[in-house]
Length: 109
Image (tube, rainbow, N blue to C red; front, side, top):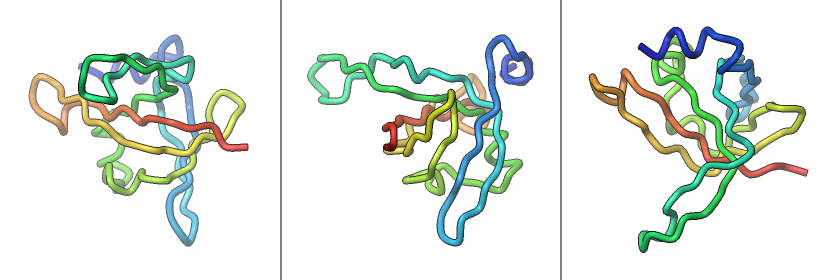
């Protein structure tokens, strides 16, 4: 179901992800949400706007990357470098593997 969305250049863009040490880079299709998404980060219903990007879970699996591998990764997206500060699963109708991961980002200087 998500394949068509991530293949459509009107929705998804290419991002370069740099993982770990020694650095490994890969290119993934992501949905750019760096303008911010509203999230309940404090658990009491107060929304916070944070930059993010969504990536298809199956694309990570195909690249041999787990969600945990993305912690502190660098994402080159929208002309800036971003550090992945947290990864949140967004399960699809058939479970987490058929869904997405929302990468919460912090712009690096």
